[in-house]
Length: 384
Image (tube, rainbow, N blue to C red; front, top):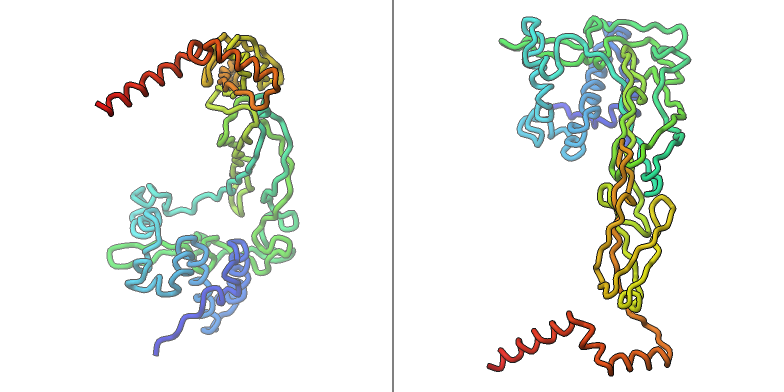
């Protein structure tokens, strides 16, 4: 009679929404409790230990966990949605398992980062989202941010062991973090099921860091946003990420992702700015000057030629955005929109009526006259 597998989340004592840290903590506790070295000649503890490792090997992998959440245990049975036991492994894992350790050479396993030796551990990279104004993008900005960063636990000096507890080498893999099995002509290499690839375990985990060897510390960092940054710019701060876990020395990096708020007056395209300026009908007809704000907080006067139409664009050289890592600036383009007056008093109406009687609509509006001529030709052709 076949044995029904228990739910993997139930095995680890976690809810389905638990994050990776919770799963890892639960796994560490259970693995220590049922480790074969601590339960010699206890087949029940050994079976429990294997069940714990099987559950964690699935739930600690994002792709395998997603498949398990959709289809349960059938995702990893032959013919299941996962395509068998190896269906959710990437090329690096597959080649590492098949070719890892053959003759000790530098075959496919080394190409994909799966050589015979344990790779040095590296701290995780961090991402920080930052929103700035267009003015701040123009001038640049120095500021201080506070972010939680993983550091070595002070109580256990990063070892993950409680005071007086011992860090012991895993007897299954002899500290290598990996085990090898021979299958026909191939040597298969996998993370050690006893220590989860760590190569060691502690007899009693540190209470402060829950055995992980690290704690989150709120850290203040000075950040420089250079002048000229664009929306979506990514700034990399090398070595400002999480500290490396046990056995590692290289910190991760911190990535600052910058977004620029939309502006009320200006639109940006690379180093250039665009400003839409409303223009009184009289100024457009007679000519004049209008005052335009600039991104640096100043003002500039723009001369409007007589007879200007909506859509006319005027270029102001060197009045645009700062260019990243340069002393140059882009240009600003002022686009005119001629505004027809909406509220007229009696005298203004009288003057406009007089303008119309003098033939102003016909003689002073060449585009409208051209349009009417084309319309007349269109109608005449229809009659013919």
